[in-house]
Image (tube, rainbow, N blue to C red; front, side):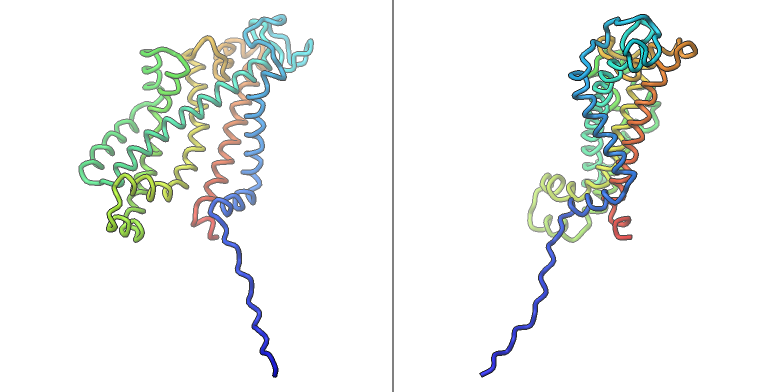
Length: 294
């Protein structure tokens, strides 16, 4: 009696999670990976730098305008004789903290307004979109200057001021994604099964609307850092903390005599914004299904 051999069944391929697929796409973008490495280096330097270089950024340690490398001061000293390296390290903490916090404020406001407008439509959408357009046409720098001037130049108020004037792009992206996703079959089925509006918005629609919001959020961190630098350059900053913009603003009148006092923190801002922009482009390529399919 002969036994019939069983046909070979090919092994099933292991399903790849969307996050793993996005990370795989992101790794293929060499510019984005370079930006991520630079951004991690800056973040680690901002966190651990004060431990490795514990000089007080407000302490006058040497003669003013000592050039970089003189007497062991890698970045030199500013117009008051303060260690510029210590100021840049401590300034990184403040600039990154304000950038991240302001971006979170903008995301919270923008996602809330965009989600409500895109989900409920009708009268609610009209009112919220008119509010969005009002904030969109406001001169953002001037409006934030007014807020800081009225309520004080603390880090908290600067963060709130930047967040309040920067949320419109997130609101429009969120609204457009909600308008698209709310008409899909699985959302209609969930609505027909009696799922509440709150669960529909934040448990079903919002997770599927996150990819473009994440990309915009990454870019907003860079915009907030640049915004804070502009306010600090104009003197609207907390005098008890050091930020990159504050370093540039306090040394701007000596740019011809000691250009490094402005160039070094300016390069720190430029490199950070470039790294964030590269990461944002990489996220866009990794999370955009149209680009991922190519």
